[in-house]
View 1 (cartoon, rainbow, N blue to C red):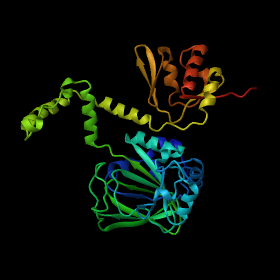
View 2: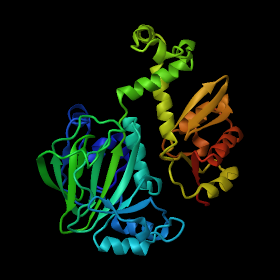
View 3: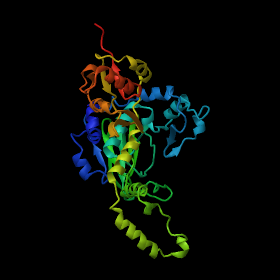
View 4: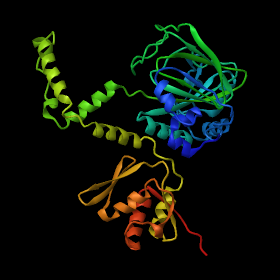
Length: 403
């Protein structure tokens, strides 16, 4: 199974795991236990990433440190060994060090690779949590990191080659972001499982589970897709912050001289308990969730290659041209005071109210002939709306063939 965009958009977790759906995983495994998702198709991720693509990006994208960094058995290779000038990574030196046994790590790869961006965008949408990707290229018979735990869940996608993994006991339960692994203080427990992750397979490791990996006798290329935990405590903080914008009592200062006047906290606790008891009357959870999702929408904008050409062509949209909402651009239409407002990619673009049906018809729909849009507008009005949408980068137009 190659990269299946509709399947990825429908259920990103299921696409990762190679299953029909993610219901059982979400109900019984997510956040609880590691999962080795075996799969017979060794080329399952061939369309997502390859060693050749990585080599091209290394040699042509002028990446600065720490966008690329190198490690040997858990120790950073001094950047001075592969930096050229202005913190620019020297591709030839990276290749030399890799051949000598160093692991090459491409950080935040979703910011420079469309496949990773799409993967992060779809999993973020499904999880309502921030995601990120790092790429690990490890020589044969080498170890990148010694046993450790992460403070976020990870999905390891084995792209090429294989790695031998060990799962250890001894990790903490649900560590927070600042409860990081410290090799000076934290020792791994006993080995609980050992297996080989082969190309096309995925390993899921919840935060706090101790793990380590070494390559086999072949090069290993894998993606670590991290899902940043959004805890109940985080949700409560966001909820109280939203309430404070509307309710004066939550904006008042805490008691003056708190540490001196109420050192044991008894009087303050009584007031705080009363405020918490009343908090439920003011909570607007829908607003908190919507704001969180809007913040994510702007993180993973699609990388497009035709924006200037489309902007120049916008003024000449014809009735026979195909128009489509750009894939990967989330958007919604809000009707405000007789106007139609598109909220998308961290922006708000205002249109006359009469354009609302045009906007709602286009968002998320299949390509359609411009003259066939069922929006109740005459052609000139519709053309004006389409021109604006193309210039804003929301819609793309495909020219009709001349007879």
